[in-house]
Each structure stands twice: as C-alpha cells, then as structure tokens.
Image 1: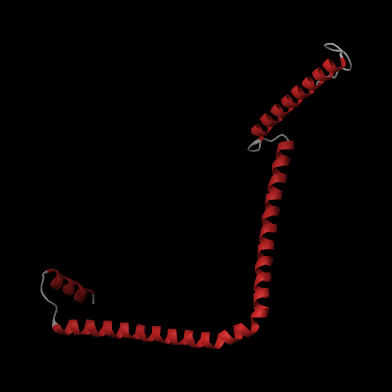
Image 2 (image 1 turned 135 degrees about the vertical axis):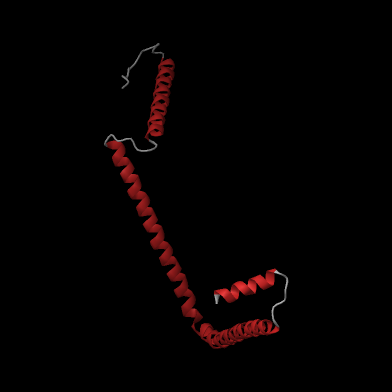
Length: 151
C-alpha cells in the first residue's frame, strides 16, 4: 500500500496524469462519502423538524409551569454560586486577618499600617485644632481648661 501511494505521488509530481481507472475510483469514493453525508444531514433536518412539530404544542401547554421552574432553577443556581463565592471571600479575609494579628506579614499589610498612621495623625491634628478653638472661644488662653495626653 505504501509503495502504491509513493508511486502515485511520484506520478503526480512528474506532471503525468493518473490512470483513468484511479480517477474514476476516487470520484466514486468522493460521491459515495459526500452522498452519504448529505443523506444523513437531510435525515437529521427532517428529524429536527418533526421533533419541533411535536414539542411545540407540549411547550405551549406546559409553559406556565416550565417558565417559572426555569426561573427558579436559575435563581437557585445563582444563589448557591454567589453564597459559595461570598463564603470563600470571607474565609480568605479571615485568614488574612489571622495572619496579620499573629505577626506574619500578609500581602497589603504595609499599606494598612501606613493608612492607620495617616488616619491617627489626622485625628490627632483635628483634636488639637478643636481644643485650640474651644480654648480661644472660652478665653482660657493657650492651655487653659483641660489637657489631654496623647498616646
């Protein structure tokens, strides 16, 4: 078989025509395979049309049940998936907080520390400014009234 195919390729590469019998066999094989696939395609189309013709009245009759059932199934699936996603997110946040509190260095802890320092600095500045304005309004001088210690 391999010798035959190699001989066939050599004949084609040399520019010589294949024998007439080989051309007829190839054409007959192509027509047979193509015809079989065409018949199979037609049968599939006919089966689809028949199934649709039978199923359409059933879908119309049962649509008051099927549509709410489909909506319910979609909502249930969405609910379970979102609840699972929120659960995974919550567990990862709790694990991050645990690592942070136990002294490990989880990703993003540097930014959290910087933000905490900025917030405490701003809160201290706002408290000092408020005390200063209260002291000015009451006429207590620079440090009259109560004093607070900073931590």
